[in-house]
Each structure stands twice: as structure tokens, then as C-alpha cells.
Length: 235
Image (cartoon, rainbow, N blue to C red; front, side):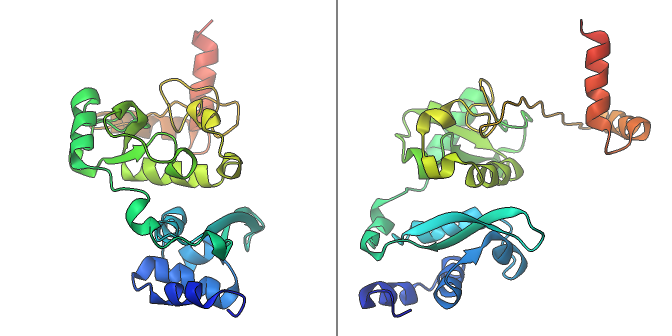
């Protein structure tokens, strides 16, 4: 702790909100905190949101990669240069996206998740920047094309993928502009990988079709079965 200026330390210790305080105090004690620790030790299932809480308080936070307990690469967080500390960022940084923006998106696109393309109760949908705020910064809410509607699970999946993408460090906005997670309606890659994604959701009476698919192919081979059908019937 002695490596940090007194003013910086005083500010860190003044944070009382539970989620950012958890991150801050763990880093002060251990030097860093991993996404695995946030999930397993503290019960936070969305580590990028925890890191964002800290950054939104004007505290410099660096994301890097470490190995998890199972050997997988995961995110870890540590404090950046105290010279970049800006307590005023709390009032001048990222703003809360307005209800008016959500209403405008629903009026234009309908109450639909952009990733799963499923119509949902508007109350569960969340507004998100197409290009992550951490990469593209803030956008004018009058330009609703810069935003998207996501259900909670899609929002978590997008955040996790973006957090683990190489561009999280490179911060190339044009890279994100051609990514599935920003523009699922027109994309060239999925977090840098040459992939295409089709999300199939079974609802209502269609659940029986899903059960038949699983019975026919098994849960591990459902995707392969669908691809085999495409190869068979699409020439």
C-alpha cells in the first residue's frame, strides 16, 4: 500500500459502495483480483461490471490475463498509474443511459433483443452501447443507431466476450464496428474470429420441437445435426 500516494489511498479507502469497494480492498491487500475470485469468493457473476464500477469512480484500472485454477486464461485487474487518478470522472464520465433512449429504440425496433432476436417484455431489456463504452467512449443519445437492446443474458455474454477480446487492449473502434456483438445484423467476425452465429430460440409449442431434436441428436450433437441438415438440403 505504501507504493501509492496518500491522496490516492485516502480516496480508495473512502469508497463505501459494496461492489467497487470489494474490488478495491482486495487489490490493496493482494495486488490484483481475478474474475475467478470475483465469482467464486464474492459471488459476482459479471466481473466486467465490477471493474467498470471502479473505473467509473475515476480510479485507473488495468485489465490483463492470468491463468485460472483450471489453467484457462481469465481476466485480472490491478490499479493503473495513480497519476491517471481522476475523482472528477465520477461526475463527468460515463452517463446513465436514459429511459427516453430505451423508448426510442423500442419504438424503432420493437421490444426485441438484438442478439437473440426474440421479442421480450420491455422491462427486462437493457440498453447498451454497440461499441463498448470502454473502447468507443460515450455517444450522443440522439443517434440511436449507436445503441442496442439486449436481454440480461445477452448483455452478460457480450460483456464477457468483449472483456476477453484482444481489442479490449487495442481499442480499435473500427474493429468493433465489424463485430457480431456490435452489429449482429451485419458483421464480418465474432470477436476477431471468422465465424457466423445463428441463435435459435424455441418458444411455446416449439419447445416440443427442441425436445425432439435433443432426443434425436443428444444435447452435445444438436448443432452438428442442424449443420448436417443444411449440407443435405441446401445445394
